[in-house]
Image 1 (tube, helix red, strand yellow):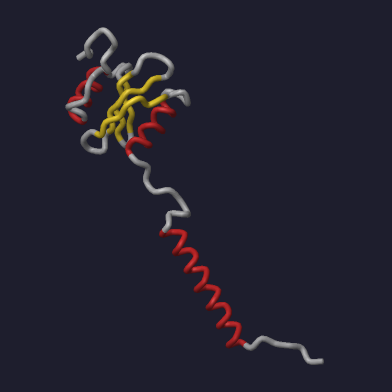
Image 2 (cartoon, helix red, strand yellow; image 1 turned 120 degrees about the vertical axis):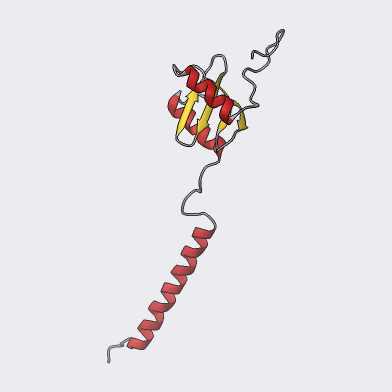
Length: 126
């Protein structure tokens, strides 16, 4: 009995076909965002920053999109809501010791943002 051999031309054709199939599969995965997530939205970024800064119990109550990729909103951690400003590389809270910097940034990136939610029986704090 003779041993069966694969000719070189046939082996090259098979390997070339396998490379094309794998390339098509990889292209499909990349174009459907299957290999990784894209950049998170500004609200998702703010939520992640707050959970890292405050803790896993941080609940974002309200958000507004500000200027220059900023997000302003209210967050609570079981207590009274606190104003926050989220920038791509920074998070500032109303309760931080840098109150003057917080107020200046709030006026700059979220000029129309309300400073407190309205309370029952009282008006909004300005």
